[in-house]
Image (cartoon, rainbow, N blue to C red; front, top):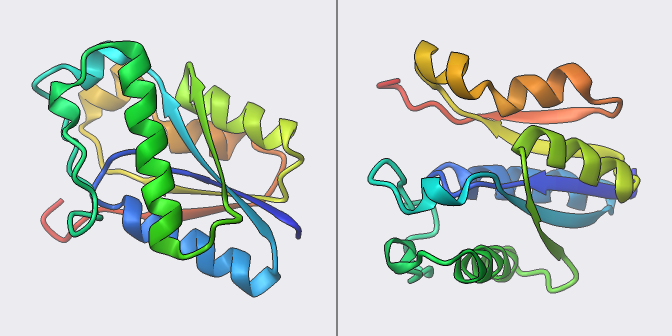
Length: 157
């Protein structure tokens, strides 16, 4: 295994997903690519969007002030760069894609000839799953390569 794709969102569990994926990559001496998919720009400016994630001690990005797609993409790139810095490995590649998150994770893995995909699994309400679907479920059902799915639910969920 030489290439690992780690898909991250802005959920507070992103730190755990990044650290777990990076530990796996280190154990296999694999190259890492961090991916964030900009699925729906309107979501980032809604009151439902929560920019809080596990890197509170060193990320000072204020996503609530960002409204333009270029600025959102720049904010996502900054997020991934700060994640790379947190992991302490400047050789990690960062990549931003637009579109459906599940489709883009699968397409990116294919494009980069990834040997492994790492992503988190969030707990969502039944209604959210029906309306939005599950990114993790889609990737699990359609992936042709191994996955490491990090459960991200808290005890209260």
